[in-house]
Image (cartoon, rainbow, N blue to C red; front, side, top):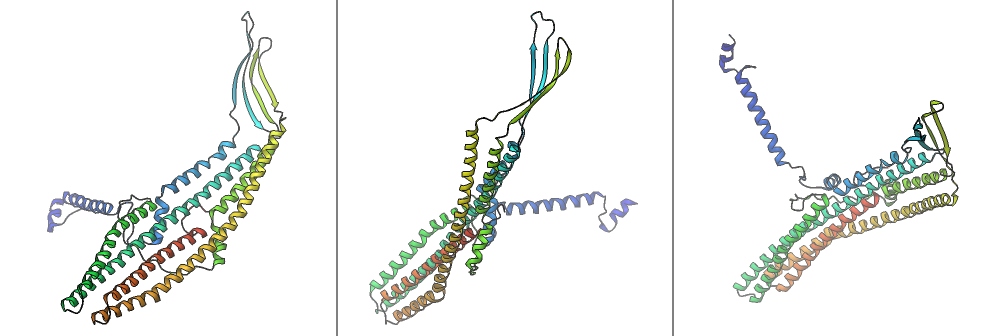
Length: 435
């Protein structure tokens, strides 16, 4: 009865051999799609187009320097447990008296534990915890530096690729000039020198374009290295960077004084030295020990032995020197904090001014200078084609346009780098440890 139902109308019934074959085929198909997808999207693939947030995120998760800094911070986080623990106890087996006759023995089995009579262990623990916190926060400085390098490499590669587009346009323009000069020479209205001059300019621009391929490879390798990738991996197309005006400088200064990990790190260092002063002062108090355990004597038999003792800290000059050393280091941290606040404020203001200057130059070149240079070139070409201007005027106009376009590319690279420098000064990009 069941077999007839399975064969009825060609249906596949759950539990039948046909159903098992169908499930196996589906699983194999899914596995094939998964394998191809994993092969097509390697772990170190970059999004297309590659934009600034993706650069920040990728560098933040792939640079070995960040991993090393965080590993060191995790290692130092174990120091409080190490320096704040009591010394290991000592087990002592003693034969206090062995008679020559060998008849019996006075002996004991003792356990000794040393411990301070002050809060020195707690102070050491707090000092080590502050030192570990300072190192953890300095890992944020590593994140900022690494991210700034990656953004700088991004803008450098963007500039090289845009320069390639400029030179492509110059090569095409030189080819057009060569054709126009050749046609005028064939018509007998221009000398052969015009053809040679135009062809020389074409060859010059073609040579510059060919040389730029090596610079592109170098810039891609630098970006890959800044992202923590192999230098020979391909780099996708880069996204355009929006030209957003920066926030007011006073707001950025206030943000930097809150966000910069260096300031929080120095604050933690100040706490460390304060705890070290406390630890050195605690050393004026004596150390104590207690020793106890079972014992036996020939006269009284088994019993218990207990011993208590204290150290005598008589070398006061050594302890006083340690206190003064910790105080001096604390004063150094105070001065370093004040100096760092001043430098951070100056760094933010300088980066903000550089960004404003680059934005003004880029806007002028984009909106005024380059359009006028292009219009001049078109008018000069038309005049040359009509026999009203010499070829040298066309070449000069073309050179002027090329120099303007190249200057615009370089200024926009400077603009991107200035924006990255301002972000580094404010402490804005990169995840990093937060205070």
